[in-house]
Length: 95
Image (cartoon, rainbow, N blue to C red):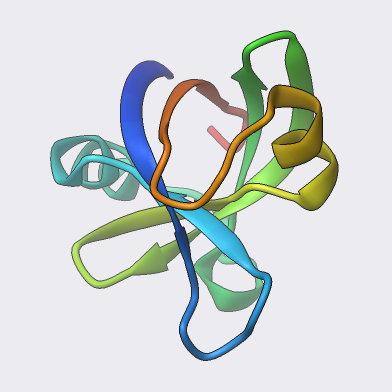
């Protein structure tokens, strides 16, 4: 499963300096429908591309979708600030 979308970067209120992008709800529903082994916190392994930066991480369920953590190294390399619109290429690895 591969997805391409744009969404704003936001900071998690419960934890300073933790930043995420929320997947569109319809994409989250598509990912949730695929049976897979349960991982901690409902994590799903993914490969991500933002600009010239690619990395492997996990997305996590939150409300009606999943959220993608955007680490500091990526934010710095791609010059991403809170509330910026981020274009994401995401490949689900847990199938």
